[in-house]
Image (cartoon, rainbow over all chains, first blue to last red; front, side, top):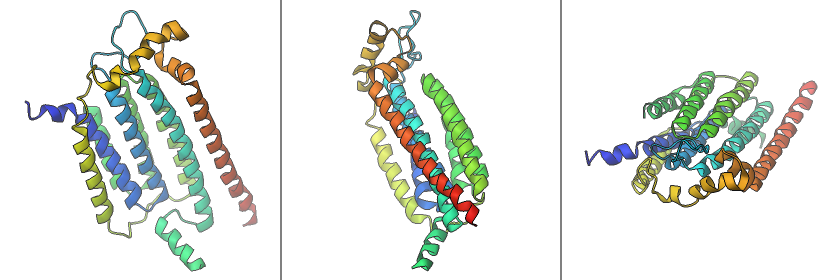
Length: 122
Length: 173
C-alpha cells in the first residue's frame, strides 16, 4: 500500500500532465492549423485542471456559503480559471479567424503547403 | 478517477485521428468530460462556463471554420520522432515535479490555508454575496475582470478586422 499510495494520491496530476504533453505534441508535430488549435485547447484545459485540483478539499462542498456546511473548497482557483476560460475562447476565436484569413490567402491550412507557397513567391 | 481516465482516452483519440470533423466533435466531448471533472472538484461555476463556452461556443466556431476550409488533415511530412522526444522529456520532468506536490484533497496545504479562508470568511460580512466565487470575481478582484473584458473586446476587434477583409476580398474573385 505504501508503494502505491503516492501514485493514487497524485493520479490527477499524472492525467493532467498526460493531457498537457499530448497538447504540446499536437502543437509541435502536426502541421494542420485547426489541429494545432485543438492541441492548444488541450494544453489549456489541462492547466485549468492543474489549478483546480489542489483547491479541492475532500469532504468539502462548492464555495457557496450555507449554514448547513462547514468545509468549502478553495474559491480562488475557480475565479482564476473562470477568467482563463473566457480569455481562452477569445484567443481561440482570434486564432480561427487567422486560419480563415490564411486559407483565403494560400488556399490551404497545412503548414508545409503554406511554406512551399511562400518559397515560390520569392 | 474514471472520468479522468475517460479524458485521457478521448485525448488519445484527438491526437491520433486525422479527420478534423471527428476531432472537433471529440474536443466537444472532451470539454463536457472536463466540466464533469470540475463538478467533482467542487468548481460548479467553472464547470458551467466550461460546458457552455468550451463545449458550446468553441465547437460551433470550429465547425464554422471547418465548413469554410477542408475537413481532412494531410499526412504528416516530417518524422514525429523529435516532437515525441521533446514531449516525453517534458512529461518526465513534470511527473518528477508532481511528487513534490501535496496529495490530492488535503485541507492543510499552503494553497488552501493562505488566502482562500479569508475570502470564505469575509464574503458575507464584506460583500453580502453567499457565492464566494461571485464575490471574489466581481468584488475583490473586480479590476481583474475588467481586464478580462478588455481582452475579449480586443479579440473581438481583431476577429472583426480579419473577417471584414475576408468579406471584402470575396467579390473581387
